Image (tube, rainbow, N blue to C red; front, top):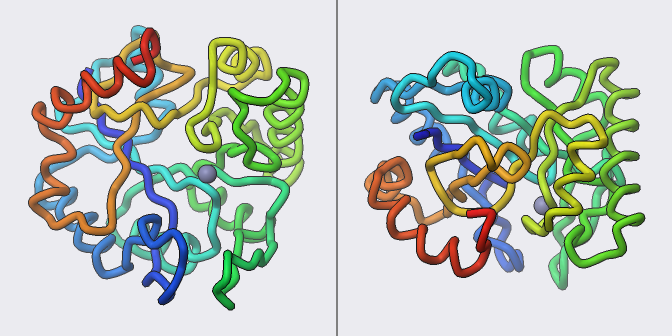
Length: 249
Ligand SMILES: [Zn+2]
């Protein structure tokens, strides 16, 4: 089924010398991309509606898109949230509970990464932005003992539910790292579904606990942004996905 789940990290101008400039989309570019979705008649929807459709509910309209942000940086509140609101778009933000409200220095730069606080999360949630879990400490869950992965999955959900006073039902694997046991653990912990870094703009019912996404790169011209939604994107990534993700792709 065609449904493109977009992945963003920072929406901000990349600080000079930042080690991960590939994670930054400028607010101007983000605004242009949202304008494009609006003007071209895309249906921006929630992960819940995509899951609902995958599990036998209403079919999705053609050109369905969901917008997700990983890591929960503060610039999402400052820069992306007003743009989403202006376009009437919903989104899901996956936050790391261990760094809520923190400022963490990055590599050799003097820059700090600032993370969303509990207060930000409540404001976003009240505005119908979905808050999901991106674990407590952002470890590679597919590579650590299952009891430690379970703690990351279960505790982060508990912390977020206490902050928000509502169920937290979506999970994003840090670094996209998971295996069948970790995915089962996410399901057993009460999540409705999870997103991965399998690269595709199509989703299958078997993938509710590792939904593929499309990572928006900072060099994405509008032409390239349009390509993210094309059949060509899916075909090109099919072979790579099979090689990297095997049965999950
Ligand atoms: Zn992450």
